[in-house]
Length: 158
Image (cartoon, rainbow, N blue to C red; front, top):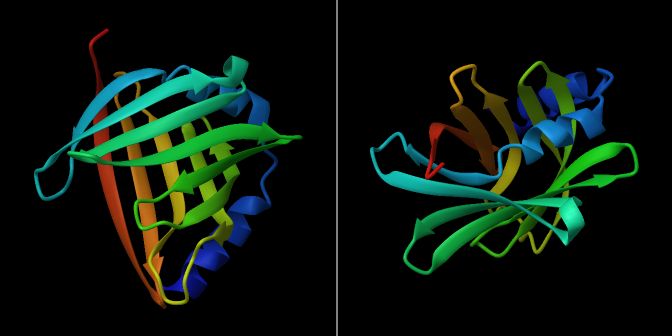
């Protein structure tokens, strides 16, 4: 997906009214450990935990020995925002642009530590399945090109 198409999608999603506080409560219920498989078959771990008196949700990916990635969700007034801390060293800021049922879409708002042409997380969505699994799709943009990945995770250890 090109950058212009992704931006048009983000704009269209941003026009729908959102109950961000209710969406945040749904996402908080994901606290725990999850496992999935990347499209290439590699296993990936995902953990959600609450911090700061329940005002922030930390999403951590175990990408390999000594390598992880974080996204921290929190309310900013009436909006649900997420900052992604990428192993590349950039920090995209995203805002929930749409909430429909059990699907939550986040769109890029800006970034720190982002070098020109460097890949960054442009948007993502989380969908909570009826069977308890979650599906997370994300798009990374590098220059004018985008690449998406979708992974379904199941809860472990509960």
